[in-house]
Image (cartoon, rainbow, N blue to C red; front, top):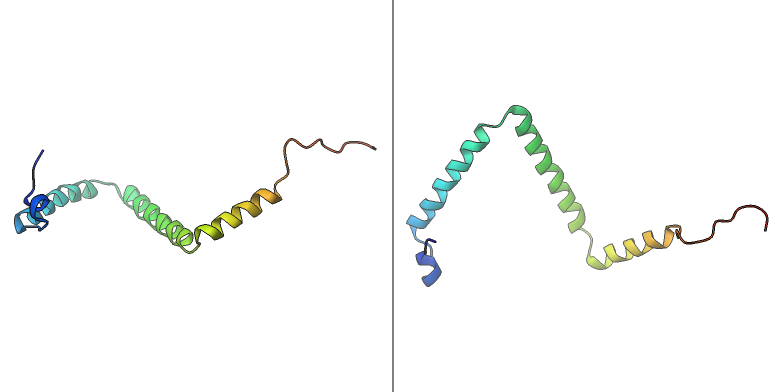
Length: 87
């Protein structure tokens, strides 16, 4: 395990920043090896994820809870005796 100076001092040296950038360059090589279909899929997946996060971040916990309770109240109860025939 590599011990970084920033763990002791709380500061980041240029050497540590350069070490991090070299690992990003290795990750960039993986992106270059993707097929066009894989790249489109990754972009579309990221776009959908961002839309979902934006949609859920607009509601507070209280709003989501009240919406869920309303959903449960509108559901039919599976253990009710079905009304079949006269009587």
